[in-house]
Amino acid sequence: MITFTSVFVILFFIFILQTVWLFIAELAGKDLDLILILKFLMYSMPNVIPLVLPLSILLASIMTFGDLSENYEFAAMKSSGVSLQRAMKSLTVFISILSIAAFTFANNVIPYSTYKFLSFRQNIAQVKPALAVAEGQFSEVGPFNIKVEKKSGEKGSDLKGITIHKKNPNSGGINNVIKAKNGQLLSSEDSNILQLVLYDGFQYEDVNPVKYEERKKLPFAKTAFKKYTMNLDLSQLNKVDPEEAVSQGTNTMLNINELYYTLDSLSANYKKEVVSFTENIHSRSGIETVPLRINLREMESDSIKNIEKERDISKDLLNGYSNTEKSRFLELAYNNITSTNFSIQATKEELLSKKKNINNHWIAIHEKFVMGYACLLMFFIGAPLGAIIRKGGLGLPIVFAVLIFISFHFTNMLGKKIAQEDGLTPFLGVWMSSIILTPLAILLTYRATNDIGLINMDVVLTPIQNFFKILFNKNKNKNNVNGQN
Image (cartoon, rainbow, N blue to C red; front, side, top):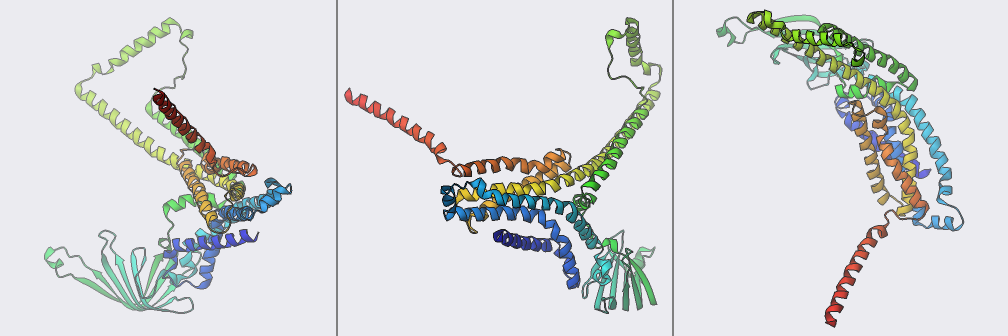
């Protein structure tokens, strides 16, 4: 228990540092106080548990059972009639309880923390409006670059020495500069609009004359103001990456019951869209509904002859028209086909996006069960592996633990990515790593129970030894025959 707790705390601290490093751009240079940083870490902590917990169980199991085997304590237990399964019994019960707790944690705590984490990242400027503007440097807020010389006040909302550059949406350059002596930032947590109130300043705006000769003089218009209010869109700050928004969408913020309820609506809507689009394309084609299966034996011979006759007539439909009319008909047909093809491609992308959303919800359901099963799987890999390699401490066990966990995590990420793209079913995509490593856990448990090494070298070396023995005997017999002659 002490080993597991120590390993868990160390790994948890390492993964939290990695989280801080990933989001350092959102934290650095924004005058975040200690409370906001602690909130950021608190909301991100539960999301690292699915990585830390299985790895901690794996490493602690290898270290514990490796230490027991290295000190010949297993040999003493076996001589007293205590088998490996009996030695693992109490720990198996503990890991089973831990697996159930991990499932409950994944189903209730992680969705809530994910929601709070994403909301905190998106609304960080609303919590403290001064975060939108850093002191002594230009801060980009939508089309504006804002620089202030000094911030003061309780929340840093009082500004001095303000310089604002407004970008030209057409050219990308700067065509509007605002300078003010003082200013104030006003915001509300219920709104995405940040008000910047400026006092005692000037606005300089480039003027583009009609005559080309006058443009060389670079004319501009200067306007003085006592008070000027600007509205800044806070949604431009701390935007979540689109790919991340897909992987951390609403599916990661729901528990199992909510996911199943949402899936019912999404699946029904998807099927409705498919049927509606099929009927729409069929009606646009102008083709009458024809049964998919036609039993020719039940059709009378006269009906067959009439169909063949109509087909012959259809081949000569354009014979009665001039070349100009034929060209117009073909152009209309081409435009109709192009329009239909464009509609099919657009709808295909839309349906694929909805299918990915459905897959993501199924993946979120299976991930909650995989987290609990991974705890059991890592224990039944780590415990027998430690008993086989007979090494404790932090040397060889760390090497084995890292290799096994990297294989598990990489396979898991690959399977989920393929399942998101509808290349695999969500079940196979999420459970792929567990399915691959489960036979390894069974094999290691069997070999450790029967005191078989990690690799039975006799299986590899015996055929090689037999081959050389046969080859040596043949050469020896040839030399004996040659000596007798």
